[in-house]
Image 1 (tube, rainbow, N blue to C red):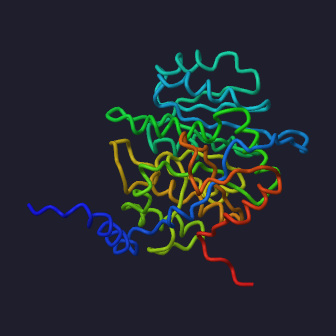
Image 2 (cartoon, helix red, strand yellow; image 1 turned 120 degrees about the horizontal axis):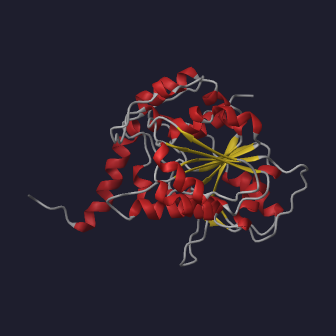
Image 3 (cartoon, rainbow, N blue to C red; image 1 turned 60 degrees about the vertical axis):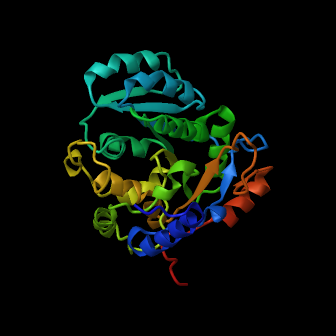
Length: 321
């Protein structure tokens, strides 16, 4: 078999991605994909009273990770409810031990059908929780049994979203200062950036999108909270919640990797927020080498406001005035 010389491989990959863009959808260039550095360089102080009611909706399929998630969730402030789903009553004791003593809100553990990965539990299993909270933090036990990559990705997502009280305060400052921001999500995990496209999920996504009045077209810019962990206002997800999905809408678990409703929903979250009238923003922690041109430090509130303005991207076509 003839091997392609190394010098030609990168250009050929670029050509191949360009050729597939009309089918797979396209990501914007990495150099223009901006994220706000967390924690911010200033100490945000809330002027909102009472404090926002926060819920963590966490799918703990892997109960051996319960303590890791409890340690991370400890960074949340008061008025935070912990809503946990799992698929087996046998896993409840380990989860109860890990979350014993939580005094900042309720701990609600539910055994739900093993359908829809983390997507069905947070949309269907805890559909009753959205009306009672101002902000939701979505987490789940992303884990790889065959590679360390999934574990590294999980750690990166957790650290970015709630890795310290200062990071949580920074996220809350975004929501407080910018009521039009509906989703705060981590920047993409670098090793999987090349996989961020429709990946065989376009038809399922288009079918759902039509029900929400969202126009989808192949080849349009694609972006979504890869890994399915993010902060959101419940109102930003209203079009999706109003579909009234049930567990029966999600297939039985057979380790599917694409072409399911859960894979489609993950790729629609940002479009749903825009359909509801909200925008979204990305955050990131500075890499250990301290260098990343697309991660912008946030020195003060003015810098935050400027970043929100310059980083705005609409995935849906803007309405003409």
